Each structure stands twice: as C-alpha cells, then as structure tokens.
Length: 127
Length: 192
Image 1 (cartoon, each protein chain N blue to C red):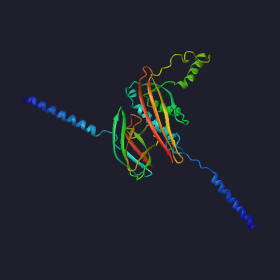
Image 2: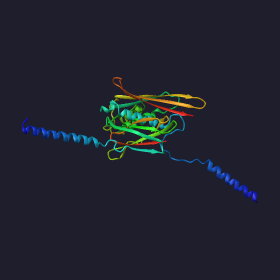
Image 3: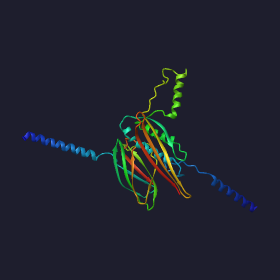
Image 4: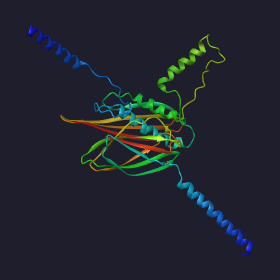
C-alpha cells in the first residue's frame, strides 16, 4: 500500500467513526418517552417496577409493570395521557380503566397511543 | 303559652329536618370515571371496549398498509340477557376511527333509507337546481364490513352476582369474504 492510499484509507476510517458516533448520539437523544411521568392519585399503594416504550406502525406502545403492595385483592384504576413532541396533550381524554390485582401481584399494563403524534405519556393510577 | 311556644319550636325543627333530609343534592361527575352502581353493562364498560377496539383496529394490517379502508358498520348482536344499546358501541368506535383520518365510513344499512330519501328529495323537487342536485348511482360501496357480538355469562346466588362479558368485533372483506381483523375484550363484574 503506497502513501496516498494509506492516507485515503485513514481518512475514510475517520469518516466511518464520525458517522457511527452521529448514529449513536442520534439514538441516545431520541425523544421517545423522555419523561414517562407517573402520577398516583388517592395514594394508591402500588409501585411501578419497570417500563418500556417502542414505536410500532407509527404508534407509541408502552408497557408498564405495576406491583400492588396491598395485602388483599384489590380493584384499582388507571389511564394514560399522551403528549406530542412539544409536550402538548394529544388525543381525547381517556376513560379510567379498572384493573384487578391479587395480593402483591405484579401486572404489565399495555397501552397504545391514540395518535401517531404521541411520543410521551403520563401514567395515572388511583384507588 | 310556654307549651304552645315549645310545640311551635318542635314543629319548626321537624320541618327543617324533613326538608333538609328530603332535598337531593345534584352534582356533576366525571364522565370518564369508574361507574360501579350496578353490575349491569355501564359507561365504564362501553368506554373500555371502544378504546381497546379502536386502538387495536388502528394497529391492524388493513389500516397500517395505508390503503385507507372504506368500511360500513353492521349490527353488533346483543347475545346477553340484558338490554344493551350496541349502536352506542359502534357509533363511538366509528367516531374515534373517523377522527384518525385513516379509515373512511360509508352510509350503513340503518341510515341508508334516510340517504335515499335525501337523494330522491333533491332529484324530484323543482326547488333544487338540478345542476347541483345529488345524482343517483354515485354512492361509494364499502370494501369492508364491521360486525360483532356481545355475549355474557351471569351467575347468581343469594349473596353474589357475577357477570362476565365477552365482546368480539370482526372486519370482513366484502369482496372475497376474508376475515381481515378481529379483536376480543373481556369484562368481569361482581356484586357481593
């Protein structure tokens, strides 16, 4: 390999490194589910133990793991608020949905955003 | 005199107590709140069904493929032992889906007669400018039809009543008869 070829090869290496760092930075600063707000109303004795977000068919999908800390079976309620990239509430106001927990049970609540503009959510839970 | 005065006070107090007890307080409530007045089909059930069905439908292949399906809404059969206005379910689903702008609806069987009457009124009336009057034979046919069932199992003894609802919706391809989408949701309510 002559001098000019190795120079070109070295230059290309830097370009590849630069492009890959842009991709990594781009993924890390993805605005999807940046805030993931959780609100408990009436001191519902539950704990969010995990959450996951992904976009499928253009709609934001959310999985939230909720653990009941009650010593008895309990019927609780939840709903989601959805926000666009400017933090503006999108979609209609959701209805409260009942959810039944056995004692100390952990459940995964799955939700799909009502509109494609939604990139973040607030999870509300109450007794 | 003192007895009369005492009687008057007692009567007045009784009237105040009676009026206070008899008057009912009227308040506004949250239309999206959980309703548990009885175990019968209620607003929370309707809202839960509509939300789940709409979200599932918007994520179905027939919608995400981008073809912009044209749908007619057919009867959702009530197979339960109670009266349920299933039209409320389909009307709400249609409203939410039409707001998404990815699904379009054509006039359904129930509203067809009204649509025909309007066309005939415009066609046969001398008061309409015939250049702008709606023509016959211009209606768009639905490529898909939405239908379904609501069923329930009710168990009851002297202390407890348990109701299980199962709601199933299907989207059928009118042309080839293929089932393009189907979703099911369940609700269990108990009174003890």
